[in-house]
Length: 87
Image 1 (cartoon, one colour):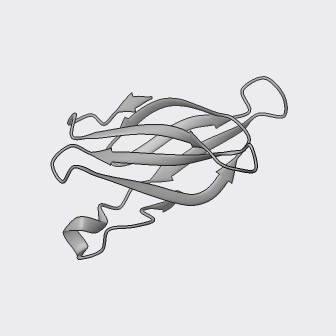
Image 2 (spheres, one colour):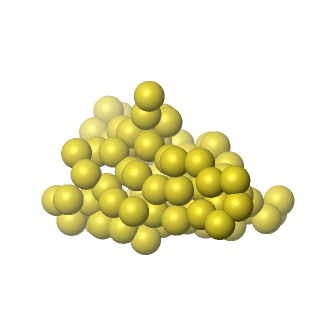
Image 3 (cartoon, rainbow, N blue to C red):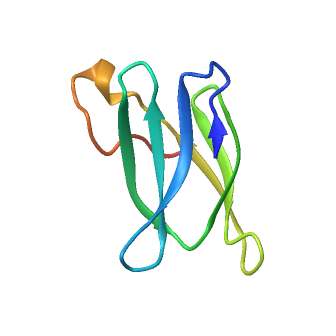
């Protein structure tokens, strides 16, 4: 788990039925959870700065860095499946 730099959002992982994990973002202002659609093996989150979540997928074996740009969809009129992998 990691808090955004403004402490409004909490990023955390959630297990799927396929035993993978998805990235979730809790918005404390809107009291809503947005879930990303991309699945990861095991997520280790590092930080959440300037709207970008940084972490590692599978920190022990075949690690890949995660950089995920969070888009607050509530402010855009939608409420599900937020964000996109940052390039």
